[in-house]
Length: 88
Image (tube, rainbow, N blue to C red; front, side):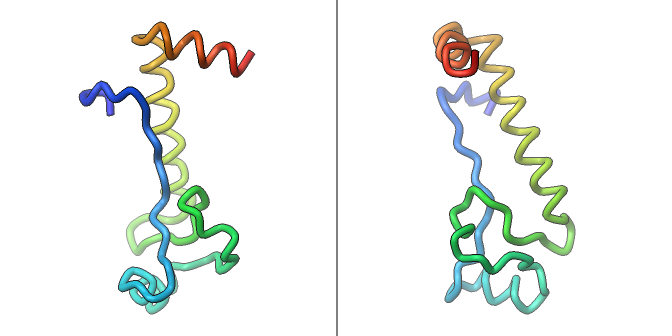
């Protein structure tokens, strides 16, 4: 994101929707920990992987969001003004 100098970023979590190959794989490997369909939005972590737990994936997402916001606050005065207006 930093190298791309993106104006905005939307970070979503991979979501295994029923009927997809990902869902079948995640189900067979017991990666899915949340079957509340209201959470299947891409904004809520509902599965881990064999390499990363849900907590690890969530932390990666949070770190990425924070780094993006901090970078934009430092380098983009328009973003800084909007962010400060909304958060103060």
